[in-house]
Length: 271
Figure 1 (cartoon, rainbow, N blue to C red):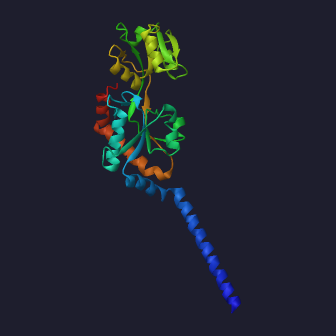
Figure 2 (figure 1 turned 135 degrees about the vertical axis):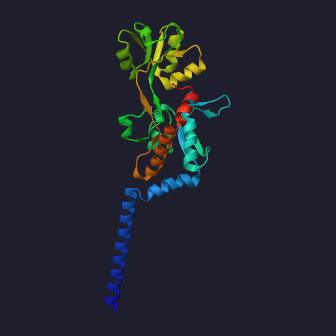
Figure 3 (figure 1 turned 60 degrees about the vertical axis):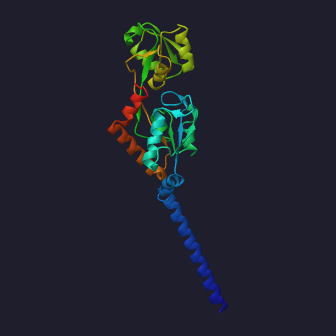
């Protein structure tokens, strides 16, 4: 009798172990395929009722603080419009200002849901994060306060400031091979070079230089674009984020088709 009971207990324990093992395998499989985490991730955002978005707060006209300390700009508008689409409320978004060096790490470290912080879509970035449909096509342009400079050819043999170690250098050399390039370490230093008449123009990103024109009306952007760089929303990789990525991409594609993004870019003075 005791032997039969012992065998029954052993069989029961074996069944429990096998059942637990099967459950664990299934759980790992579902998590690996994103079938559990996918619903949980979107449900978590919807449950808490807001998006967390990394943005710039010092980059007019994409993301900056107005005189009252409120965030404004094209990227702020985009974040609020996405919140309206995903959660039904335009103000259902919490902003986290970030420095340029942290724009990808806040996504990789799962500190925010999205980063909309003037991130150019590149192949190297696409290997570590997901990038949305571009919401704005940035470009390399030249800015000057010299009224006699109206076209690119007017800078053929002039001094032009460029950011050190930037891809802009090759672009300017291609279009203006006889110009003298002067390296600077920041946008601020570039403006100082123009103000001190050390250079005639400064070559950099249109999205940044457009803000200069708004702040300093004596400056003008030349109409020729030396390149085109798409700006994208940064999102995390992983199957569990597929629904979020899909909905963000669908929304941006609709904003482009309906003309909303073009209208907002024009409103903020972006070329």
